[in-house]
Amino acid sequence: MIEARHLRVLRAVAATGSFSAAGRELGCTQPAVSQQMKALETSVGTPLLIRTGREMRLTQAGEALVRHAAGILAGLTAAEEEVAAIAGLRAGRVRLVSFPSGSSTLVPTALAALRAAHPGTRVFLEEAEPPASVEMLRQGDCDIALAFRYEGAAGPEEWDDLVVRRLLSDRLVGLVPEGHRLARTETVEIGALSAEPWIAGCPRCRGHLVEICEGAGFTPRIDFATDDYPAVVGLVGAGLGVAVLPELAIESVRPKGVRTVAVEPAVRREIVALTLPDLAQVPAVAATLEQLAKAAAR
Image 1 (cartoon, helix red, strand yellow):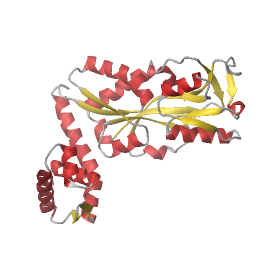
Image 2: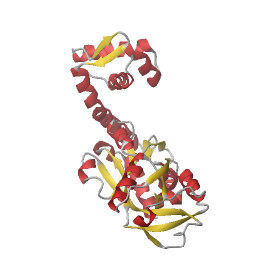
Image 3: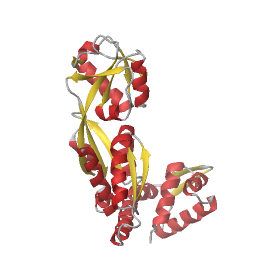
Image 4: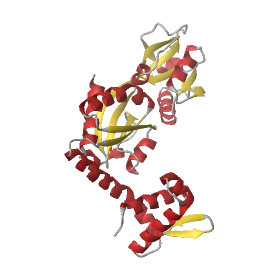
């Protein structure tokens, strides 16, 4: 009989590479981790780890069990949460991962409405950009991932194994300093900014910016790169370059010293909420998805 607690320990050992590190992650002692691993190996009847000095390596059987562990634990979480929901959502729990501009715009509105409707449902928020956030979902480390992808950047099969709740289409806009020659222009062809220094965002956004610019016939000179949207606005406002940001990101900061202009050709990113099929049946997760959709529609 394989126990869920043993699977959690195995995943921690596989991720950290040692019993002591796994114990620190799980909040237990190294001997306790060792005992649970021995119990699991006894249950399955085959070694799961190879110990060489201080290093731990998975056997083929260990790799197979770790591969299945995320789905098994997600199914168990779904069962636990559904039972709690039957009792009236008094003990619901949702682990939500969001990218920063979603955390500061969609998430607060959605979670305030969720708390008002179900005060016993607790939501734990963590920030991560896709694709890292999507991988966290697949690994069983969160219940909902708020994510985005740029139109045309990936096929629909990218999320084939997930439940996809589409929230909104977010257009990218240009940012230029107030005194810039194009600051009073309503619409700007991106090629008109080919000679400008650029401030770029997260690695995925930075890669997409380069693709857009190369499609317009030039390679952008990126002087600064930062994941922090207020920092992007501050750098543009100081006259250090130009940028393109999603409209959702502009909502989350107070642009000072900058002007926003529409950029052609139009570029949009699709904002979605993702979850696993099993978790989509959990009322607390379903309620959170519903509130995120309502927040996006406002």
